[in-house]
Length: 143
Image (cartoon, rainbow, N blue to C red; front, side, top):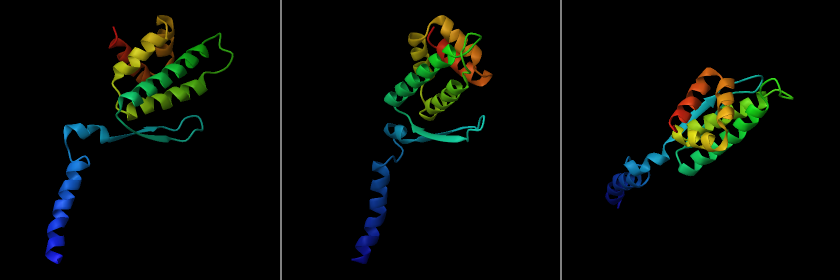
């Protein structure tokens, strides 16, 4: 009986590995990606963990679009109050987008269809350089 159990353990382990992400291309969606948003203006650093998924990427792109509209609306000389809160939301949304390993074209498509050319230009102009470059790249993929 003990020999039978000893023989079954390696077989069980091999079957478990094969069925649970043992390395096939179809299992790449199970890979987790971690993105850390640095601390900013009294808010602590945040860690976001995501897995790739088309619906998660579309949701993240819609969230970024929503907050990008608010950021632009509350930026500039005509703004009634600071856009800082919306900027912080954009940082979180962008980290979520990255954590899900989304294709930049998904974000570009959302911004292209959901904002005017003027709004997109104001968004890119108002963002810090690193994020502005990524957003511009996502938009360039839509041209």
